[in-house]
Image 1 (cartoon, rainbow, N blue to C red):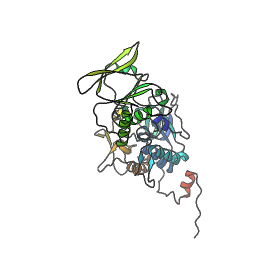
Image 2: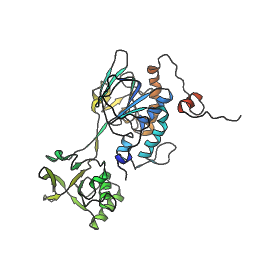
Image 3: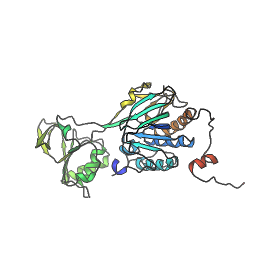
Image 4: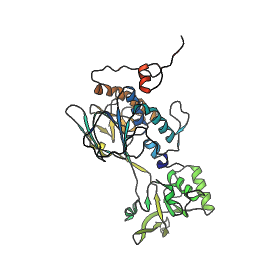
Length: 372
């Protein structure tokens, strides 16, 4: 099983440094979000010769596909009978490579203001600044934050003994692990650390509040088999307290359905309660919202502020379907909607990548010659 960190992909012509700059970067477009729809937005803009900078709070492109299901199969991408989230991201990065988009990763957009000339001042949490003619918000359902364990004092161990995501599996090898959760992430990591392999733990105790799991049935069956073989342990209950010694977390108090509280010793604690999407600063940008989603038209997928477009799961309109396929369609129309802001004196015509020599030049491919 690949982790988001394992699945992190190289980005051609990318700049993730995001260091504070003296003068802001002037650009045609800024895309907020580097998920599949944000990446395809780069492509559609590139065909119209619109240069883009891409900003994402994650440290790697791919969005939900990489963060939540890098190895899970996707079956509804046109012409791809089956692909994983990681494979889809790889293909999109390959597709947009000719356009040289610049990526600014590991940072959020904290400020967005419109200038008198119609352009936008944009600033990120790492001090990067931009002046852009257009803005595309492709932030999915928002920035993901892990749902945390509600045990008093547990937060001081986060990053040292308490983890909500696995970035480096090797750091848990040979440790006494307690894993809390009942979904795919909890079960997948419990199986990974309980079985023979380079990341096998000294012991694995899985804790869930009930004996009913949301994870794949095959994973649940495998977990129960390992418990029967005494390769790992399952405890039904909830964390209600902790034990510390010399500033370190040494155990977790688990209260079962019988009302009895037991102390479970540990070296490290992994908690998988899922991720909660947060709209974050977008909610403060003065854009029309409906149920925490951007209201857009269906001609250009423009928001209530001219020059700002919303594509993908972040937007809403009559008949909206939250599908990657729908986001790709929205990105195409949004690119044409943005063209008059970028090229006010140019008439942009629809051209086809199959036959247009101009688009072939933009894509860096040869124009095919067909016999009569």
